Length: 79
Image (cartoon, rainbow, N blue to C red):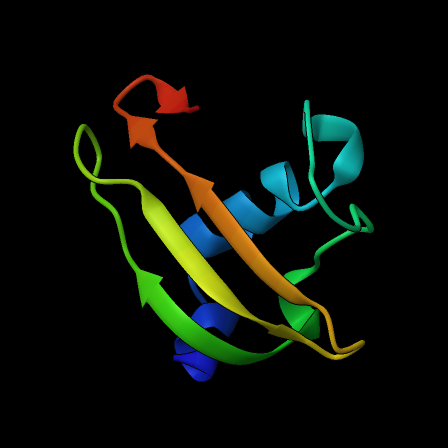
């Protein structure tokens, strides 16, 4: 999964758009930037579908933090 994460357009967009604290309305933990290239372990991931289930991933970062990221997409864009 880590290799696939490196070359996947959807995950590129999700981490770019949702991995930055300035773009997140609320957080219950450390909101330092989460970059795709900092992911060292993926605990669970589910590729979503347009107009269907969300893209979801939980894992561990190089700095030891764990993360969860989720995003949905329809045919008009990400939300």
